[in-house]
Length: 314
Image (tube, rainbow, N blue to C red):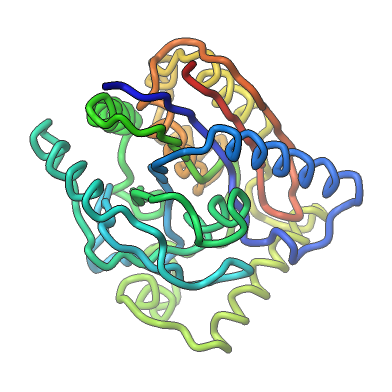
């Protein structure tokens, strides 16, 4: 019953369209995204399994699962992404949840998931908005230790999803949205300001003014990083290339040799988002697959080691 699958690993950045970048940099990025959209449209998926993180818009430290499936999901519309309901395939999401439980994954399930640009930007770039093929959203905690899932667990989860898809005769696109190297100003519970710690602890709905202030802070951080005036960790193109090499070759087990602490040390606190790529890629065969697009740019103005990788199991 196995149907064709494709993998799309794609970085996201909240600063796309907000911070200015050099004309040739923007042109190369726009061209790569346009080519990716052409490949996705040609593949014409009947189902999309979308793994993404959150940036304290839907998941908070009062209850932070390592992984969570959504049987319904709504976009908050942060930065320049659209707000509204995702086209979630509830039946398929619940069926996948049951399959994972049977396989030994105690997966969390949200029947009213809230997602942000970490999920929606990929859908927006590929389909122009939220009018997409049916989607199964899979949240991965990439910000809150100690519950950030380890590399081995991400690999095993992706393989289990692949076994679920073996019995589902639908052409499926698996998207990993996140990474690569970057360390944006996302607060942690080590922050000295109690108000900031509370903001990432308890679910809340920011006011328009609070959202605007957050956008301004992130924009300023990107420009500071580009000018060299920032204390943030710089992008690491060498780390990004190694990550993309492993996924492109199908040598996923080589990533298991990475030290979890070294991910943050070498690629930044938010480089754990790259694990969404690992989950999605592991649902396809662990061998070299036809790679129809590989693109990379280090763009400090966007706080993004920005990568795109599209492969198809033919």
